[in-house]
Image (cartoon, rainbow, N blue to C red):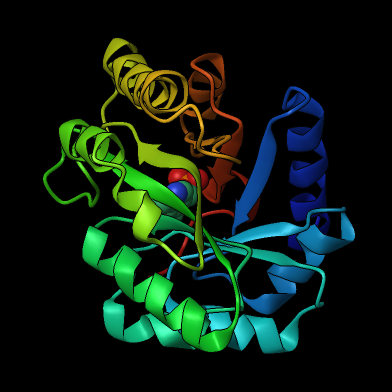
Length: 226
Ligand SMILES: *Cc1c(COP(=O)(O)O)cnc(C)c1O
């Protein structure tokens, strides 16, 4: 089987495996536009990118009905370039970034959908709010200051370890934090519905723990060449 039809096969396989209500972000970062097009032909419409420049290049080349999710660390000076062009910025990792997104969204006359990134993994290198920081943010109702940004949920990654127990604990912490916000702290927050967790190696565990948005790259497109 050639490379291209195998991408389509992987997309169909994943769509068949994912329970109803769980959406797939096909993470196409570092893969060419042709690879995205192959996945698109198999019916995939949500794609994930982690760098602003690469995202913008792909947007110009690919169909308009693709919903682009930004999933990488976003520098505040890059925000302006992607505002109005993504369906979701999944990787809001500081309040400062959130404020810049909001300000630029107001200027552009659009509403931006975002997820708050939680850091629960063991690795220091990962970005995001700690559980306590995120709970305080909602408890103090700081989201009420936002004018053109809609917080749709949370995103997180599990520790990069073999130990399944540890991975499940991380996912359970992310999902538990989401539920605490939704059910106890801010039950009036509208459209707070998304738990984005699970990647190629761990998405079945993430779905078991409550994920409704998985971000899968390598298992669809193969290894990335950085
Ligand atoms: C790259 C990336 C993924 C996809 O990882 P794979 O292991 O290739 O499936 C998912 N989420 C984020 C935030 C990423 O940066």
